[in-house]
Length: 292
Image 1 (cartoon, rainbow, N blue to C red):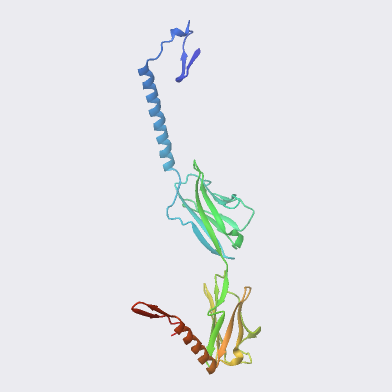
Image 2 (cartoon, helix red, strand yellow):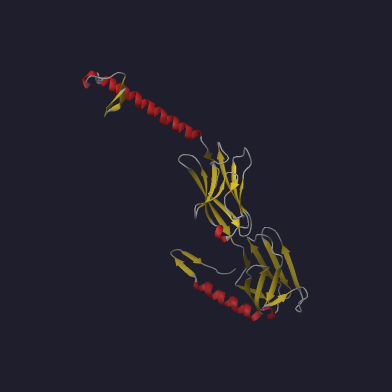
């Protein structure tokens, strides 16, 4: 069988030997146009079929959010919602900074035991769990679907550190003989601290302190709060107070106990500042007050 090729079309096979190239009847322009048109329609239809097939393939849920927040030391769970998945190995989690594969389907592919793949059969949720979250875990994580081309949804994991503050710090002013109320708040702790210790000039304060009149109240929840109450403020209470939750960096505040003369002096200085902030505007006089 002899094959004769043409530059403008597909190869044509002859069922018998040809005596000369002229024995092959050339195709007319109309025939070629018809063949090319048929070929174009066929290729166009195939392209549409491919596009339809891709539309039927797995896709991400529109409700997914690109940012997740986790507390240092706690467990973070990143959720990827994928519909129309055909295989348990169709969804993969990767770490963005080094593109390391963490999970494939329901299997974990990293030696870091803090990472775990979670997926229930027939569920559209593919989760990546990270236990004992560390600061270095912060960054992008990619959920990929093994389609052609590969589809990717990126989630940024934000790791929040616990921190401690004393309300009103760094300087707190109270009047002599008044009640001192110092409030310490522990933010974003993975769990409530075992204990919170108060210090005055590096000496611990407790119910049995020689000063007397000491009360402490704690509220333990997602945010832990400790109140230090000191009755009948006196000049000896002036100094640095420290709130130290166990295992965390303490917070400090400088307490100033004012006598009657000091209070009047502060009020006088504030009044002078108020007068200096008088702004003249045509037909309008505006006074900016710094205190009540």
